[in-house]
Image 1 (spheres, rainbow, N blue to C red):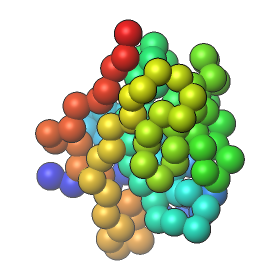
Image 2: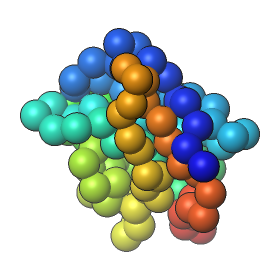
Image 3: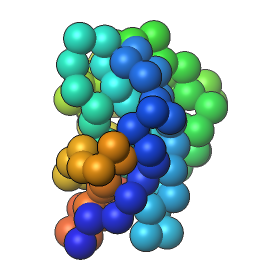
Length: 109
């Protein structure tokens, strides 16, 4: 079941936000020239929150250990081979809605 993550006007293209959806931390990124995406809000490297990540419009970088992820695919581009788990996202009624059921956040030791 989809749950409201945030109002659409709370995030702009090239920016990101975090939201707690169904007790799960979600990273919502809006890559430049693309559409909003929803990924796990914890870095798979050391399970650190991505709430204070750096996002340059294309790449999400964890400030804790400098791992970097593609903002459109969630693929790790700096760090061990892994990816951010992606959550289904829809835009409806001027809001961003995310489905958390069935998605397991990735972890790398």
